[in-house]
Amino acid sequence: MDIPMLFHAQAEIKNTAEYSDVLIARAQNGDREAFGLIFEHHHRFVFKFIYAMTGEAAAAEELTQETFLGAYKNIHALRGDARLKTWLCGIAKNVVYKSFRTRGKDLAQNDDDIESLDVSGDEKTAPDREFLSKELNQKISKALENLDADKRIVFTLKELQHLSYKEIAEITGHSIPKLKTDLHRAKIEMRAALRPYLEVKK
Image (cartoon, rainbow, N blue to C red; front, side, top):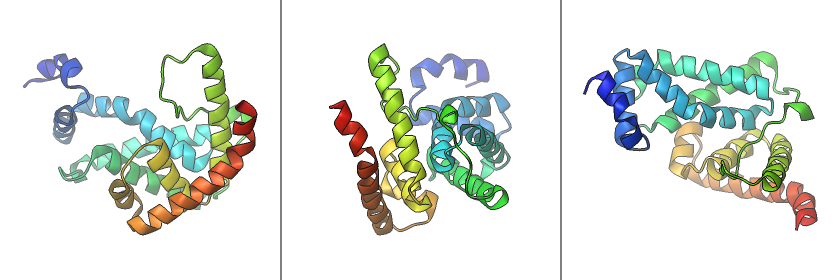
């Protein structure tokens, strides 16, 4: 399949593992356009993950770019037994932790910087519900800031990004029992932080 045929078939196989595998293979053979499509499809996912860890939109965008630069340079390290999202998150996690060490853990966040995590995932939300969804996302972002790093990463990947425990274990290097414990504690803390808001909105 040549490149024009590959991208002509994009609409038909866009959401399949086959399409992802073809893009990866093309990128590993030096096809920059194929890697550009990988970036296009996964940029938002990686940004949300990094934003949840840093709590600062500008830094998250910068670190997302750094993540994909690292992915581009090391695309040959991606093997068939590794899922692309899991692999990208592993790179992103290392990029974020490196940034924490270099710039300091506490990245300032102000209300104007808060960006929606889009937990609803609905692109056709009515205006009033869209406002409430954005407001709730801001509250979630604030609550995430108060979780420690381990709880924040497992909450983000499991509850917001819907990865499996196995995938999260591959990304973090933590055991599944620890991840389950951290997620349970994260949920307790998040519920406590969001309860006043949710009770008012009932």
